Length: 197
Figure 1 (tube, one colour):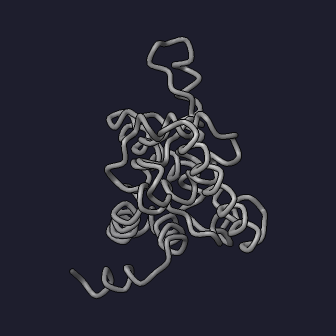
Figure 2: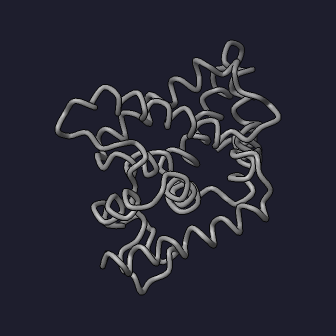
């Protein structure tokens, strides 16, 4: 590993992406290193987030690949003052919506907003959302919750955004998100207990 590559690991995601875009035409090695680091950091979480939404790992991988391609194609739309991960995930979410529309007449259709979060009513939300969460239970739970609660829990526990990142995305304050997450967890646990999820 070169000293240049080691220095790249210290950069934030947005800095790496902009450096990659700036170097694409002039230094292909730096471009490849930057995009490789971003891919290592973010691709697993992106696939995981998409998979929880659609319940089809192979399709989630395909959508993640298309997300990366679109991010490169639309790099000129990236706001250098913003964080890269929310922008990347937004592209993935938009592709997911497009895919859901294509499949809306199919028996396999799963709405993009239907997600699940918990395994058992006696566990906390944080304990139950992990890489091996039961997708069917997740879908059942989040289908039963209102859309804003489902989306908030998904951002926090499936997509693993920090409270500050969620606040930036929704145009709110971090303290307000903290309160909304507390209420969302309480609502989700109540729904789980009531419906024996």
